[in-house]
Image 1 (cartoon, rainbow over the protein chains, first blue to last red):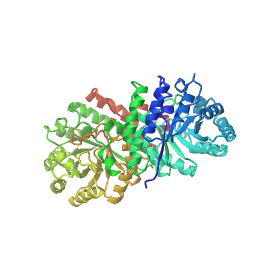
Image 2 (cartoon, rainbow over the protein chains, first blue to last red):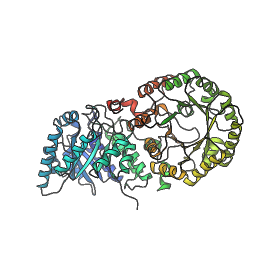
Image 3 (spheres, chains in turn cyan, yellow):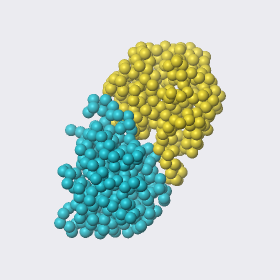
Image 4 (cartoon, rainbow over the protein chains, first blue to last red):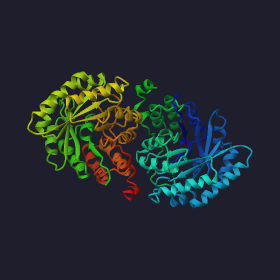
Length: 302
Length: 302
């Protein structure tokens, strides 16, 4: 039995939020269905943020509700505050991801709140969720964990302090996010070792081309949960210079080639790009494996 | 003192050979000069192959001779056989790289010779070079070391047999080449461990997006010599499906960010793209760091 790696597809949330065009709800759902058909079992489908700030996310409640009807899918939504968490719960989300920036500059730009105040908000969210009749997981997503395009270098101790704050706030899981793609593998490895097993997942961007090398560094420290976006969509509207997430297709290729089981069918995953492209005509899609084609060695090795 | 990593720029050889257009000699030299100005101290400037097969390399003798006049530069040329090695020597090359394919299909397509016969050719080259008054290093470059787009899976034992053959032939150094970009980090690590220190360098292609992750796996096994190409040029005319080399700019960013000293100035390296583009108008240049810009954390960390 190969060891399992979990991929959470974040394209429908992280991939759309920086685009000018708004993808129609029906197109989002066809894309999500194509991802599920490829074997993805966890998808971050949207963000409960004010529609006037990010119009692409205005239909998130509807998307969450529809996605929850797909069998076997864990539906994740981003919720920046208690109000967002309550909306996610009402829509039926199985898990929320609550961002907490390490750097003050990104925290103020993205959340209009100091990092310490956001930790308090997370504690309020956890307390409210625990009082509800239905379970909903709360993940703390540590933004700018490895660097910030506004504040520059982010010291490891600052990231570790946020991780500790999230642990105290009682979240179910903590992920480190390289929001702007400044991380390097040595830094990823060192931070994960310093965090001593407190980190469940990594959310990596490929801004500098180091995304998969950073994922490898995470793998080597025992991380088995990775966010990724089909066709490498992504970015942060409040993090200048950030570019796309690591490419789900290339990540699956790497993990499966290394002997991990992702449960994802790479042919069907590449086929899901058509559903994405249909909803975003003209948008450039990234990804080396889709461009080169799956090599014959992939099947032979498996 | 940071540990040193050596990068050999292979764009002028590996980057040009698959292109339809022929770069004028003067443009090649301006590009090479820009690379030297950025701090590169080893450049593979051309290939001594029949001009009718690869017209882009017809001026290699002239390019080698001119590059040898640049102070401090180790000038490398590819030589597929004794005749090429003799031409490289006559032109003044400091080092030749002699390809030996592991897979029979690539060996016949690229060299029109069985792998075992090519090992014998390497032995003849080494013997001839040793008889000359001037020293010239001979590197054995193990092509399709991790997989082949013609033959498919390449067993590790086949690669190790070629490595052993090259050692017996008396080469000065051995590099493993992922000619078509099918390698994964687990495979790179395992093969390097099995080779037990016999490997000096890695030549990686980014066909599947795993190039830097594979470089990281090599680093972790003690490899400190990497081939790379400015703007990710590259491919093999006789290896269908191969795409560009790992991007020198992104590799330098990764290595320097991790604390290695490459001796390369990243600003000047990115500036060298203008000299490349001038010689190849209209050609698409790859590279994440040049596109995103060098982040402020790069200087702060250094």
